[in-house]
Amino acid sequence: MNNEAVLRLFDTYADDAFRLAYSYLGSRPDAEDVVQDVFVKLIRSDITITRGKEKSYILTMTANRCRDFLKSADVVYKAPFEDAADVGSDIEIDEDDTEMFEAVSELPEKLRVAIHLHYYEGYSLKEIADILDIAPSAVSMRLTRAKEILKKRFMGGSRYAG
Amino acid sequence: MQDEYIKAIEKIQMDKDRKIEMRKILENEMASEPKKPAKTTRLGTGAKVGIAAAVVVLSMGILMAIPTTRTAISASVRAFFHMEIPEGAEDAQTKASEERDNRVIPTDEVDESVQAEIEAVVASQDQEEYEYIQNVTVTADYYADEELNKYANYYAQKGYNLMDIEKDAQYDDFLNQFRTNEWYSEGFFVNYWIGDNATGHSGQIICFKATPEQLGGFRKNTYEYISYERELHGQGEVTFDDFWTKTTDSDGNDVYEASWVGPEPEMKLEPSDCARFAYYTLTYDAVNQIVVCTVEEGGGIG
Image 1 (cartoon, each protein chain N blue to C red):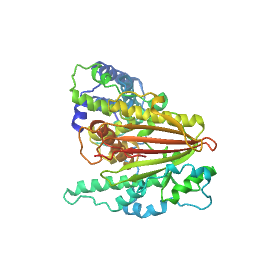
Image 2 (cartoon, chains in turn green, purple):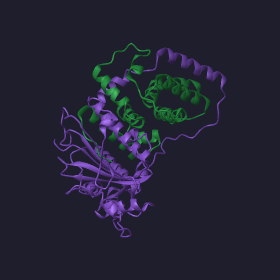
Image 3 (cartoon, helix red, strand yellow):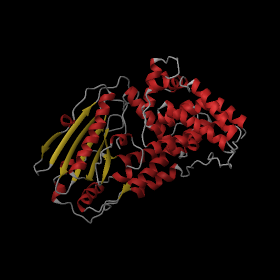
Image 4 (cartoon, chains in turn yellow, blue):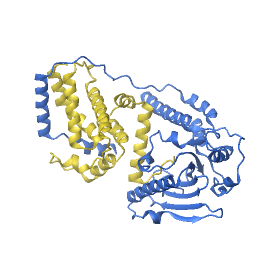
């Protein structure tokens, strides 16, 4: 991939990669570092990406880098909403949106990443499975559990004992 | 839910200055860095789900824990008979399997592509459940510890699937985040369901070997989970000592009890959306270092 193409990908998908990294790490500086690592890696490698697969490829690289980061940091981050919303942004977010975002942010990392990829990025179970390198059934399970937790938080639903 | 999340996350972007700075870093990188050999893309290599739901259901029969007659129930086990599974309860795993078997998927009135997606999701969930049960269920003579096996034998004879705690721990579980204290050396649990789907509730009996320190770990983990529930529902804090009450039974075993009742939900979409509760009764056989704990939880008043 030539350098101009990498820069075009950066301009187009850097924010998407950032949001995914933020879903994983819950830390703005760490998420930014991951995005930088991903695109530097793209530059350093002579990778050819199939046309139409650029975004999912970058998100796959981002997911892999985030997992490596979490392993090396040996820490699980929680995502404080204020960090994401306030730093470098003058955008106000509605209270209702804040509550939902906070709820998603407080999900365990695996669940919130699945929610992000499915509901924000609009990927199918199979596509998410490819990005995260897990079985589609595992994606389905993560989405189901995430929805159970969110439902319980907002509506007081019950959870299966086990 | 989706719209609210999208609206919020869309407003979260990389800091503009940081993005400009990063772009410059990339440009510098391009000017200095020679290309390295190509790497293989991982896209398109996702795992495949290949077992049909019908096969899953047919296979369920072989997964039932097979009771053995190798051990008689000892007097020490009889001391725990108040940990009896409630009258009228049934094994939750078997119930779920039967319901999967009899399930009708309402796909007649939807588009073919949507129908396929629904069926794929259902099949994958069944597959996940099948693999879970296959991997976690053990037989009644599984444990090295004879005393523990007596309990396993007892519940298996009643037709309950024995789920190994260690094997279960390999799977994602909402409760895992609260299990930060070491709490067992080996053991199992059975799941039961009592009542109909609309008003019934679930329960567990957990039997495990534990040192006094591990028993403390279990009690702390349970306290952490209930503290989370209390905070979630805007209830006040309860101290660890107030949460667990300790007594002694007629056999001299320590008995711990704890309970929590959540508020009624503001909105009820399904019959099961009712006030949550959890009742714990734990007996510790200090001689054999075995814990038997019943957990009744769920909601049944909606």
